[in-house]
Length: 282
Image 1: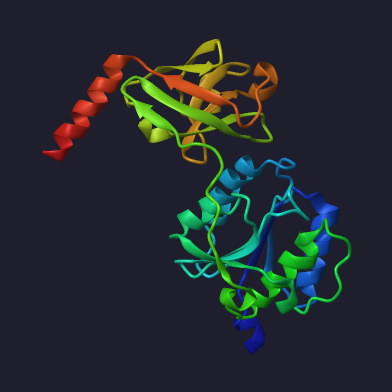
Image 2: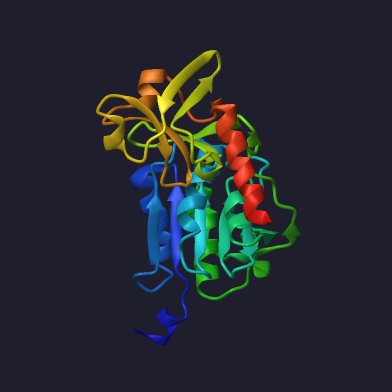
């Protein structure tokens, strides 16, 4: 491996662009970086789904080594007033993309960060083609510059960072108020409610969506739920999900990401859980 390659940062790509548009971004990076430094995380995020993308990318990208350059392009406001930014995170990683909220949760997971506006004049990236593909014409050249060792502050002036979209889940004695934040490819309804909020004694949960109340078993595996049956379980994101074993909960219930929801469990289970927490603290 050459000295140049050893000093080059890893770059990850996440987007809602699909393979063809993503390939154009990779072409820009390949022309500027040594081979083997670009990793595709996902390019099938829901189109324009900022909140859902923010949740998914935070979970995936936060597992990469400190110092990685993460490019996230879910950008319905491309060509408009939203700010293109590079965020220098506390762990040494840098996030590149639109300041529309999609980067904020990942920045927080990596220790917080300082945002700098990307000035196209500082990139020397050549003429832009139109105004609707900043992933290729702005973010990829910026990421290549950062991966090669340049500082985020070299790209432009410091700017405030936009907060994450959506609301935080709320916890009560008898349950939580949350949101369906992701519908995965299996149709599972992944919520933002941490699985460890559920009392260990709880065996059944009630999922509330609008006027619908669904009482379901709380299980450890899809197999335990039984084929074709609704069940609640802890997702791989560390949050509660509603699933149909070998089926599609989203299709059955006609639910999409972004819908508010509630989880409820018996009051007695909640009281016992709180008592145990207090006893452990003595």
